[in-house]
Image (cartoon, rainbow, N blue to C red):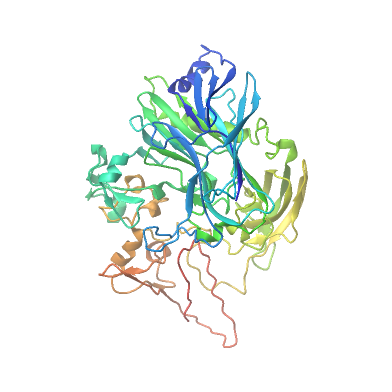
Length: 603
């Protein structure tokens, strides 16, 4: 149902990691890039790329997922009538499950080969004779230039007349050497020694297969021990016992706006393996959508598209005959190293520097595909967003998020996945500049932290190559029917200001024990509501209650003694000193997220 071009399938030797440090010391110059193609048989070829000490073997057959360092692409899809929701339990009887297929190159073409760069394009095409094939894949050029790593991107295409299909995930996966890469880094704060795959195998499965209680971890540091956690006892320091830890790959997710670099560190030798994403233009559902990063394996993911945290609303549904084409990437797989005398943790700092360099180089000038627009083929939109929230002079929309996405209604960008999106955050005066926009027609959307609703520009915006569009002042009027009588929380697409409980002591991930911003990532917090409200539901009294302490961060069901769940009804108690009998009072809700839920307001 698709045509797909993908960059490469390749293995990298550890020697490549030493180049960056030696080059900085001026002890070695980079050698030219060379490409060697060896045809072993009709159905299989092997390619070797060399950049100085980098020697990379590439096979266009799918790599063994059990190898020491392997990489593969895959896609999750279904027939048009298939259910591709994230909530599928494939173990249930008569349950339809989507196909998860590796993307296997059926052919290749050398796009470019010189002393500076080698590019190889792999491709595979759907055939009606192959019923379990969901894609026709171009594995676009592999680009290796004079840096420690390689670039990769994919072009997925549907041609006119092809049958319909549903797609819920496209990704590239890297599995590293288990005996080397033990330390994972996602951000300055989220870093840790990770469990081994064997620890998950010997652990206790929890509510869903991705969550496991580590009962017999190989590393003693991952076992329970006495720790100090002031937050659990009202900021009074006291020793408590932390039991076995939970490992759950969803705990290592992050918002796409922050998903720029993540990866692994080997301490002996000190080597870093990093996935760098310089642009989010190919990602879906805006900058606040969350997705997976790295997890136990050691595994690093390039999540090019998924319905994680959104469900079936974000599924790419293609009708019979519907054409489509989209470029995913490029992303950069970067390797760095240090001498044994240096602190390996510094590899993270160096990886961040490389990430900034890649972002500043976007859009790249070296991909040769005509489907990837260069800088002079893109456009720019700038302006200033103002707020007119009450009767009076407009104010600056400080820190607003402004984006261009395919034309649609207010909020449609949150469910849009087939096109490109381009977002920027305004400065303190509401000024914004959206750069490097693909040619096409878009709607302009915006929202302002602290204000309800969302702005949509009255007319669509058409971008042509090299265009620079100045919109001037745009004025957003948030929905309001009169003065605000009371408000709970902050409308900012987050529940961070509400009460987030600590996890149960025997179900913790220590990464988040002292992290108030990410405490909500702890496992099992939905059952903490039952601990706090065992036989009655939350009652919030305006003027008395404090939403930071008294408003649970998520509206969840209560767990009963037989392990079933029942719906909960929260109450907001308030007094109006003056009631207008003929007046109209409006309750407005700003939802940070919702899943498998229904809101019922009972007066």
